[in-house]
Amino acid sequence: MESIWTAETEIRRREPLEGDLETSAVVIGAGLAGILTAYYLEQAGVPTVVLEADRMGRGQTKNTTAKITSQHGLVYDRLVQAFGHGMAKHYAQANEAAIKEYGRLISELEIDCDFVRCPAYLYSQEDAGLLKQEAETARKLGIMASFDTSSELPFSVAGAMKFENQARFQPLKFLEKIGEKVTVYEETKALKVERNQVMTDKGQVTAEYIVFASHFPFTNLPGYYFARMYQERSYVVALEGAGPLEGMYLGIDPGGLSFRPQGNLLLLGGGSHRTGLNKGGGKYEMLRSKAAGLYPGCQELAHWAAQDCVTLDGIPYIGRFSRREPNWYVATGFGKWGMTSAMASAHILTDLITEQDCPEADIFSPQRPFTAQAAKELAIHSGHTMKGLAKHVLPAGKGKVIPNCPHMGCRLEWNSDEDSYDCPCHGSRFDQEGRLLDGPAQTDCQRRKEFK
Ligand code: FES
Image: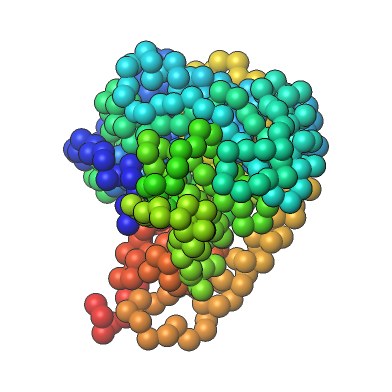
């Protein structure tokens, strides 16, 4: 089912690329990160075009819950431990600046996109200690954070940590208006990138700077993003009659839920899992059962799922794609925090490309120091990949689709909540007919001869 954003927003269709083109910068991917990067590059005097394989905003931007916040789970204490106060502060500053910039831009361009300032909370029903500690660290990094033992949620909490002055909006209404300010070629699929050229199915684009903003980079080498990133899915139900809520909430306990108001609706989210590991299904049913318990009589108006790229240390990769290709840039690995990360990417990449000073770039650099947490996650990620690869030799069942992933060959797993084949290695997804839904794979699955 489609998200409430998609249901109420029609984005104007753009023509595909016709033949070859030369420009200063080309951005691959017309989601929020790609469009904002192109917008700020143009503002800085760098002629830029955007290539989109499908339609603008039809990737992950349409499935977000659109929380504009610097509160990204329990991140700050961990960042200080791993990278020190200075780099942790850069993370806080980049995200707080992103919130302010949304407000400024929306007001300057008079964009009607349901932008509302509101607080964001992390809550726990079990243990307040981590939240108290996180609030203290966040305050030291310059964020207006506080701790309380009560909340407006319909259950008691052990503690809640509040960030002031965060925001929410309707992401596709915003994207539609910003998208009018940039040149986008839709239904133009980037197939290959070589030095300063992007080969597409419609022509070739030559540019000094190339930005990969296509959610998960489809190029395996250089960069090795497939080895240092995986994808997660999470689920949302939009409820009517669930009562008013001022703030946005995320639970930090195992199985914790997300609450986010939108007009007279409440978006209730949860059920996160590594993409490719949801054979048993039941995620929507779990959310429906929680909704019925918390808000008796509420009505479900929509349900959908989001797909997020997760890096080994949980921090996005924003910056130079690889040391080997100094004019390639990347914005990926936003986790569940695509709104502020998209705006932070746009600013960091614009500063790097125009050679401006950008102290915040250090914490997001894809070439940043490798931490102990990253090493641990790498071992887990490699384990999943080895298992997925090993399984591809097992009998492939009798369905229409040969369930081996065209990206690197891992055995796909059935996702019964969404009737899709999902890859546990790097998160590519395919529908029941084997058609590609999400990369990094670039092609459909093979179908059995008898079903072709
Ligand atoms: Fe990489 Fe499937 S997404 S093998």
